Amino acid sequence: MDLAIKDVRRHLGKFLATIAGVGMLVAIVLIMNGIFQGNIADGIWLIENTRADLWVVERDRGGPFNESSRIPTDSYRSVAATPGVARASPFISYAVQREIGDREQQFTIIGYDVFGGLGEPGRIIAGRPIRRAHYELVADRKLGLALGQTLRLGVHDYTVVGLTRGAVDSGGNPLAYLSLPDAQEVLYQQDNRALEVQRESDRQRLEDAGYSSTEVERLLPLLGGGSATISAVLVALTPGADRDAVARHIERWLYLSAYTTEQERELMLEGKLKRMTAILGVFRTLLLAVAIVIIALLIYVLTMEKVRAIATLKIIGAGDGVIVRLILEQALVLTLGSFAFGWALTTATQDKFPRNLVLLPEETMLTFIIMLVGGVLASLMGIWHALRTPPSLALGG
Amino acid sequence: MTILRVNHLKHVFGSGELAVTALEEIDFAVEAGELMALLGPSGSGKSTLLLCISLILAPTAGSIEIDGQTVYAEGWAHRESRRLRREKIGFIFQGHNLIPFLSARDNIVLALELNGVGRRSARQRADELLDYLEVTHRANALPGNLSGGEQQRVAIGRALANEPPLILADEPTASLDTERGGRVMELLKRIARERNSAVITVTHDERMIAGFDTVRRLRDGRLLVAEEYT
Ligand SMILES: Nc1ncnc2c1ncn2[C@@H]1O[C@H](COP(=O)(O)OP(=O)(O)OP(=O)(O)O)[C@@H](O)[C@H]1O
Ligand SMILES: [Mg+2]
Image 1: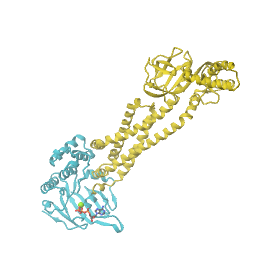
Image 2: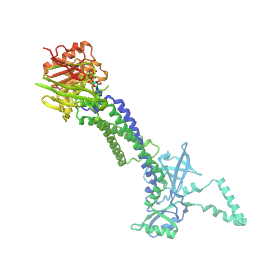
Image 3: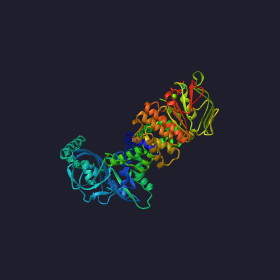
Image 4: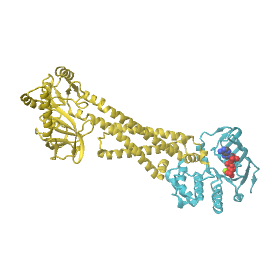
């Protein structure tokens, strides 16, 4: 006869309620794990998916994602001319907040050379990549845009021609891809009124500097156009090229900074992500500890509730094995049940979760093992108590 | 054949100033099939004696022999007291002490299974006992939902399940009405006759002892001279 199962069946409601409660706690721990890993995965998604050999940015800047980096659009040509460089493409990225579908949304616009340049969107799940120089957009589906829909950015409408899944910036916000000139236009172009104001202030500065009005008229257009910059140059190396040597060459001769993908990732993990991941790490450790303490307490209480029955078992001659099994099995039912429930809950809600959850199987496994060990250790406490219970305890009261 | 022999048994609760000597200089023997009644006022040590015999309480001094085997002698106690109880002793408590999360039937089945009886025959045997004790209709009920008398009868069934050579019953009729109490006593007598088990029954009630082979009386932890009934 399996005593543990009999007891569980008699107190099914209590056990189910406990499993549901602890299971939710487990779900929170797993979701925390997911957020923790999701945070890291989001943080480096763009870096990893761009697959550039080198990221060339403004000198001594930790860019283009951790710090703003502005370099002249043309600098990609000089980079391309560096020995060992197979391809160099301009790349721009900046965060915007716009209303899309009645909702204020934060997203990052990526501008790249749509005609064979690096930095194009990865796997497109619907539609196609950008093929025209202007007014086409590839958006992540998280933005809620449909193929063929148009989005107004600045002074133009952009048509959604492709959709991606899981394309996010380091903060987990979705990406929108534009052609480089479009992206620059959205970033720099102002409407006529703003342009007028800008021209007026430029004119004033030139006149204050003592230029004649004819000179001012000649100089003004030059001032306006000089603001088109990019964030970075993406580099693909020729096969066999020495990555570090090329990077040193670029830094030395072009007065820029060049990072490898690993260095970019390191910058991201050590910079923007560090504090966030540290906080999440502390949280999930605490949560796991709390979950184990609660399971331990429950198992101990369940055992305490049974001491009289256990003493009676001893009186009718049950061996220690029978008693150990009773407690251990219940501990296992509780931990396994809670974990299964928590896991089911997590996977069921994973897609509806507002953040990207990355559930690494090895981490889920580790959490499971920690909980199992915790449950067994907790039941050892109960077992120790049960084995010490004198049979005469069954007679009192 | 002598099933139980108790020599110079002594039991002291606690120690020092708080020490209570519950049993002293207890000497008696019980033969197979013998029905013995143990009488005595409250606090005279009746329960303590049964608990010492079954090694639930460790005696302080003396010796105990069960079925030809020394199970306790001067501070030495049989290492496997639980196996001993399982195989040799059926115990009916003053309280009922059924396992609360097992049904009436399962309480009896458990006692059988602990003794190595297979699941099917254990179930069959339990049903026979329940029938014999007239609680078949409550076989699937939990102890908490049984009346005191029903619990008592299930507890008796559990004590009898393995047909032990020695049955210890601590006021088995306490929670029963006179009629049912009489029937339980009849039952114990029948077991002694039919199965040749020795039965020691504690009781307060002088009226219940008719038909017993031996009556022993305890007072302040000491046995008075036995009366023989023939
Ligand atoms: N756990 C204990 N600690 C200390 N003294 C105890 C303990 N149990 C019993 N005693 C004492 O030992 C003596 C014998 O108790 P016991 O329970 O054997 O009496 P009894 O004859 O069974 O009484 P009753 O008819 O009321 O059941 C009593 O004086 C009691 O107070
Ligand atoms: Mg008593």
